[in-house]
Amino acid sequence: TQQTFANIKATDPQVDAFLHLNEDEALAQADQIDAAGISEDQPLAGIPMALKDNLVTKNVTTTAGSKILGNFKPVYDATVVQKLANAQMISVGKTNLDEFAMGSSTENSAFKTTKNAWDHTKVPGGSSGGSAAAVAAGMVPATLGSDTGGSIRQPASFNGVVGMKPTYGRVSRWGLIAFGSSLDAIGPMTRTVKDNALMLSAIAGHDQHDLTSSDKAVPNYAADLTAATSVKGLRIGLPKEFLGDGIADDVKQAILAAADTYRKLGATVDEVSLPHNKYGVAAYYIIASSEASSNLQRFDGIRYGYRAQDVKNLEDVYVKSRSEGFGEEVKRRIMLGTFSLSAGFYDAYFLKAARVRTVILNDFKAILKDHDFIMGPVTPTTAFGIGEEITDPMTMYMNDILTIPVNLAGLPGLSLPAGFSKGLPIGMQLIGRPFDESTLYQAGYAFE
Ligand code: GLN
Image: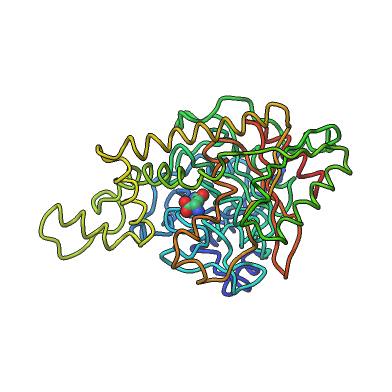
């Protein structure tokens, strides 16, 4: 733990992955673990990790990357935070993110812009850019991120680390500052598939505080890896839309090479189709923004964090606190969501988007009926330059064309390194059946 802080202090001034460090608490926890000893059934005990700063931590500042929560100290720990504490992992700090997890580059943070661990002129992806860069730069072996439309998988891909977005409901969302509640998922970001599997087993499971959390038994994902590492006989679908227009050639080549690797390992890879994939981004921005506009109503200048000064009346408290506390992108989403949910436009927008969502789910179901999983790229390109896309929301939104449909369908998606191009990592995405994270880990393990 001491060495971890030394590494962070040497490296983070260049990377800017952290918003907050818990040095005193972490060293005290490490001392306690040293004194008590580690038992064999605690594979994660004493391992340092970091948390995306939209996971609430008791008495530790939790900002969600927003000025409106700049000095917010929660009174409880998120369920995943408690679970990692029970596993005796040591939380060293909180990582940077796009404000309220809205973004794909971490440039929407109110506090700082995190850099890609491989090239400091490139974005780390987002919104879990701090969590991805912290692992890739060797500062911590593991972090937690959250993924509403790609925010674990895309930064994992841009930084060459392993990121899992579990099935919707596999991990309790209690204590995750909500963005799109029907899409949000918490998952691990690590250097290896096995580390990732260990961490998912530690955080998954039913929680009485989150009624959407599943009571299905939690597998020992890592133990299963040693028992069955083979992908022999598995059927893999490779959607033709995932290698179509807009996907960069270097990314395409890496995925085709990965398909060959799976064939050599004894799997079959078939071309399949997700015909409605192209509507995913449009449906997502209506659904996610609608849910966000509702979730963000609680930030009113009264109950949490930032309150504007010089106010004349209650209305003024709301308007000024929100105007000054929220950033541009968050305001854009609130306006989009409020519009989509308004009485006159609900049928044309929200309801239509909800129907598109079902159609996309059915596309996945049709493939997964006779395929064990789907493979493809995570992102259309490798990491882009800082400042390059931030002025153009539409281009930024299109980054997530390959990850968003997976959230709309609630399926598990694993992002893992699959190559390099011009010094930047290329990621591969494996998409599975609901609650079949095990197959994805096995296939990732066999590949890596
Ligand atoms: N980039 C997408 C967005 O801005 C997804 C973010 C996420 O998964 N939290 O909404």
